[in-house]
Image 1 (cartoon, one colour):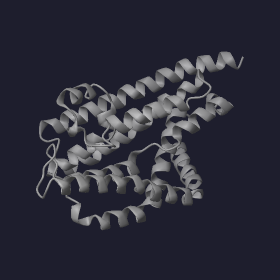
Image 2 (image 1 turned 90 degrees about the vertical axis):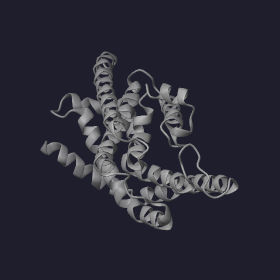
Image 3 (image 1 turned 180 degrees about the vertical axis):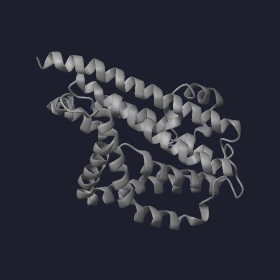
Image 4 (image 1 turned 60 degrees about the horizontal axis):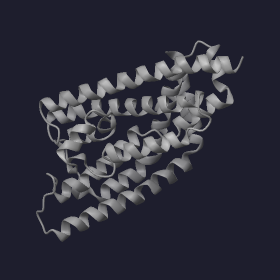
Length: 268
């Protein structure tokens, strides 16, 4: 375990070297967010005060996107998949076949260090953003939401990482994986709740998405916090998130074993 704490420290130092990039990335990420907030505020103002859309008041809709920004800062995978694919293409993983260090856990701790560095750099602009929209900010919907939200948030981060890690391992077989990454990002952006709350979708489509990992990658923690997911549904969504985390972890292990055999054969 000590060696992975060392990886965390090294990763944090390396990430803080590029702290200006983190800061600018955070600032530019608020631009589309402000656009979405302006759009929804215009929609609600056009329908008159007190208008409710799929169970969301104007204040709740604005707060939903505020939570999207917060969850993204804490859980999103930035460049880990690209770095993993580069390690495979350039042969850097060979050293992990000779050392007593698991590459998956090595990358996971680097992911943690990247999130920690990003949070440190994003704290000030995020605080300014939250202060600006302070009238829309809400407390957790219940005591259960207060307890379940951080658990769901942790599962979201793990799911994001394991899915991206599995996608990056396609580099064992495919020279360029950017197309696959962009396709996954597009599906995630639409089906996880980034673009709009999943409550706005027809019930039939929501049921279809329930069989995919995408709602667990963003909507679940937000829905729990806001009380859109209540009671026994909270436990069910946490179990669903846990299932997808284990499934993606198993997929990552399977692809690594298959990829290493292919990698070893290719390298002679």
